[in-house]
Length: 338
Image 1 (cartoon, rainbow, N blue to C red):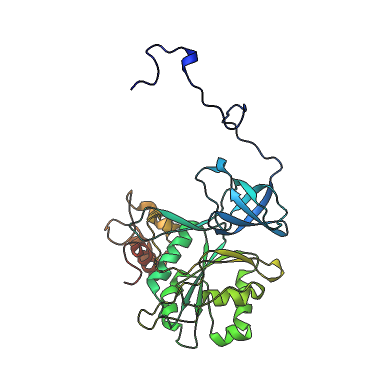
Image 2 (tube, helix red, strand yellow):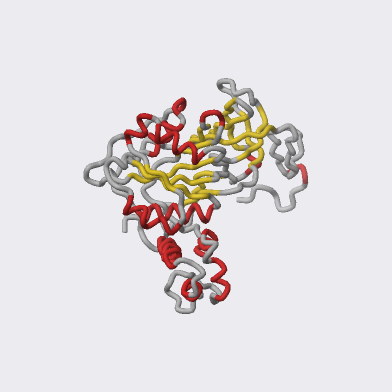
């Protein structure tokens, strides 16, 4: 059935009225010269809590940003009601360039990457020495994500009162990753928090780890005025803790000496997004040796023409460093529990 006649004139065409009045449509975006700068502290179901000067402001993303999403740590520009009063809402109109990005995928076959934290300087990988047992492959995956995203890794080992850290540290000493070992007693009396805080001052540090390793307990010790709910229960059958932190949250260290970002506990850390060729950038003593490698060399030890073997044999680098590099490169092909 035809809606109009064969030769409709202008009177035959029904014009739908513009619900926004007579304002003409335009693709020109407002510049928002009066926008104020802020930092995203947490994200919850489309609402973002931002720090603007000395107050927290609830905001939402402006439609003009399209699919671009803001995450914890992002530097943003906001307009609207920036008073921080109850039931007020501001708009995020710009998201600044990121200096670093911590990303992960659900697993190695998942092409959809998730940005966990932006603009962090350091990644604190929290691992319990017992209850639950440490999982070195998970540590390796977090190291790869840190190197790929431009973050400096820090290994934080908890529950040293239950097991020794010596065996685990043997595997990571060649990598030159800084570390600190803590116990429950040291956390309770504050000694561990003071030691860890020295490594965090004047930096933005994201904390990542399995549930039940004591990550949030440590964060609470570092920032006692903003305590988060923790778990002390680890499943006796699976050896895994239960998630209690459900969203990432940035918290200021005492005396404004830096920031810690507590992230939800993870059970997998996919590396689908990582380009293996970028991992070599974390090994400056090995990187010059790749100049004689064939194009597309993965440096994983499976290619006989890889020049890194000769580079190490000539004494330019420690063989343990090459072993560590290849262990990290092979991590992308293995599950965390392997």
